[in-house]
Image (cartoon, rainbow, N blue to C red; front, side, top):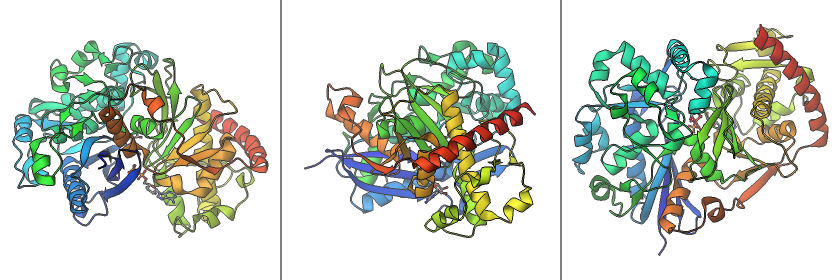
Length: 521
Ligand SMILES: Nc1ncnc2c1ncn2[C@@H]1O[C@H](COP(=O)(O)OP(=O)(O)O)[C@@H](O)[C@H]1O
Ligand SMILES: O=C(CO)[C@@H](O)[C@H](O)COP(=O)(O)O
């Protein structure tokens, strides 16, 4: 009889579940979309979030209802009875504010009722700030000044102060909403909030997602007390402990056994940030680059040494004594590509035809397209077009689409180089996320990076990473994670095409010149 391991990803647009069996084979996948599921439409989110200028939030109770739906679906289709381990992840940086007495509510949940029926009053902030929020410029400046500047903040926490990171978001609540802060007993990350639901008490923040807060001393993996106290003297108490990623934080609580039939000895591991969890799901080799094409686009790789930079992030690695994870995050990923698709009035299935209407290199045209304030380069939203006017470009939607796609690939290459990635002949790109099924995009990445592009069996490596970690811990193996998961179950999607490589080498030079002038202006 096989055991099952569930990995869950509470991402920007949906909550996804992946189940693997004791051989590591994926046996089930399901997802609940926040904006399109009939029961969740009442929350009126657009791509999973509420947008009010630079303030971008998601309703906590919507996530909880989506979790109710996901687990009911899993139970109804017979996938809960042999679960031996659950872990997962969530979109990074977002904070959840639990009201006083909520931990008691968590511990006495009534299995006859849904979570959303019982937890709706537990949050002092109903709409949690999410990673797309960029409303905290003042808080970021203040925090960087406090530690001695952007570089110092990066040396201390792995990243300069970022708008979406938890420190600035928490500071905004402390400074602007005093009564709400008083009413808050506990601050979770979205990842640890999810784990709390499963264990029926507040779960710790894990080291990987903790490194996306600007609050953790990344070298010691402990809270940086002066920063915490600077924000609020009671912050340390409200954050609780930090936990390693590869340990059990308890068993599933009675509620889940009674309501969904999950065995009571099913172990729960800390939930990570979705990108660190993708690192686990892809099981990258030290020479590989991971590219996640979700709502955001991220580029990440293993980094043996701590090399902070103000352009990128360094996160703790999920596996002990394994160095660090280097990453860069672009806010304008899938949603900007969606705009290009819609402008061409086509489906994703037909989209390759649109891309093929224009030549590789787009006749040397360069543009930057940011539907939301961009993280790197830190730039206000807008379309930055050069030789051609916006109007002219929009009248030529195929050229616009190619310009968007090529520009996004060049930004990825540019920042990978800035982060100091060492290229070698054995380098590969492993792609994941919703847009990793777009063959035109994968070919472009292969041609721009001059590396082969590979996919894995499921496109959601973040959820898969949760299931894989749970299986690994349950096995009690003495092997390291990378010995246990060898990263050999990958499929070649495309190889670089020599002619395109040549064109892009030249085009990238033009792009870099354009970029350098652009950031100086
Ligand atoms: N064939 C495709 N080509 C490009 N983008 C796609 C394709 N299929 C889905 N997507 C994009 O994938 C995105 C969702 O990816 P996903 O990884 O599930 O996001 P998240 O984890 O942030 O919720 C959607 O915004 C959609 O635009
Ligand atoms: O902000 C970041 C990483 O720093 C984002 O990558 C979020 O973690 C959202 O992930 P997706 O939902 O786009 O996968």
